[in-house]
Amino acid sequence: MPRFKTKMLWMAVPFLILLFFEMYPRRPSAPAQQNQLNVGPCRGDLVNGTITALKHNKTFVVSLYHDHRQQNLTRAIAMVHYKKIQDLYCWFCCSHNKRISIIRASVDIHPERFGLPVGGADIVCLEPHECLPQYVSIHPSTKGSMVELPWFEINNRVARTWFVIEYTVCLSVMPENYDNVLQFVQSMEMYKTLGAEKVYLYKMNCSSLMDRILHFYVQEGTVEVIPWPITSYVHLSSFWYSYQDWGYGKTTVLNDCIYRNMYRSKYVVFNDINEIILPLKHSNWKTMIDSLEDQNPGVGIFFFESHFFSQNVFSSLDKFNITLWKTIPGINILRHVYREPNKLHINILKKMIVNPRSVVQASSHSVLKGYGRTLEVSRDLAILYNCRRHLENEFGEQYLIRDTTIWQFNISLISNVNKVLEHVLGNEVDNISQYVWSMLLGSLAKIF
Picture 1: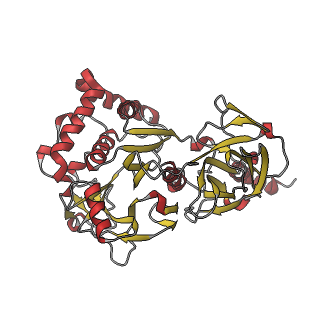
Picture 2 (picture 1 turned 180 degrees about the vertical axis):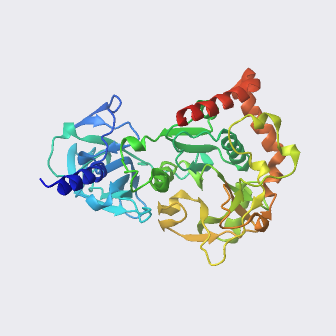
Picture 3 (picture 1 turned 120 degrees about the horizontal axis):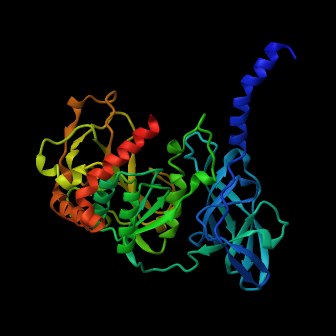
């Protein structure tokens, strides 16, 4: 073979390797011990994990829900490789006549894909008449062995008209190696002050200190942690794509959280971990939403403008530069009260408080399909506080606006955060600085 052809072949090898991993997703690790389904003719493994890969690893199912709002449907919250969509069928295990009924599914791909080959989708099947299924499997064929199929329980079979919780917060995915401990505790205590009774968190992994904080909130009954091992199932080549750009599947997580709370919570609040919907003229979410509903009958979806507060610029007041907090990894939101002005002629990002029964399908900043009216809440009534790193090329610091809205909660926030840190850390409070330095030195050791 001529030398230049050999050279060209070797140059192509890295590209072909990347292409191989892009086309063939990483196989998930071995699943946990499965429970067995044995109902009439329905036999096989009953899924108990968060993510389940269907045959050929091109479709990943998160959870299934009954949806009776328009038709008698089973809706699977899923992720698909949208260029490799295959026919899918729902194998319903009918409790009424003890038979399997197979119905072709429709796949509704969410438009928010961030230019990636994989994205959120709803896999929807019309339930057979007089079937009353409690379990269903999803399969790319009308033929197959039942014992080899994964079986899912259908949630939300009973539609309640009363709710055990008034306000639930659905957070986006906690990214890999998360260690913004201080801001997380501050956000959690703000949510509780504003009326949240439950917070759902889809977790990848985090620092050991963050794990202890999560354990505290789980034991308290405030947080429910849902494992989210997305990188074990969906492989994105780092040459072309980024998990971070995708938000680690945040749209899928958001829709799953909506349906989880369809009949548990009266309202659901959508936030990223670094965001808080702040009422300006009310003390909490309940009084604000009650007032808005009285003035706007029939509205079930409320949008709030994002306002970005710079992490780079600090308040000059020392009273919020609390000694204990200096030793905790993360951002102190009380010290960041300079926000960016809104850009003219740019669509302002928004987050939502919704009646989940009004939502069929949502994206990060909008409701794609729903029922009833929506309302964009005036910035004079409430804002979405978002503390992020300031981008100098967008606005110079001289254009930032001082906005101390967050300070109206400072007394209760400081007290509550201190109580959590002292409870979790106990006698270790004096040793936190050593912990932070050890983390820093460990990171430097990996670099050098």
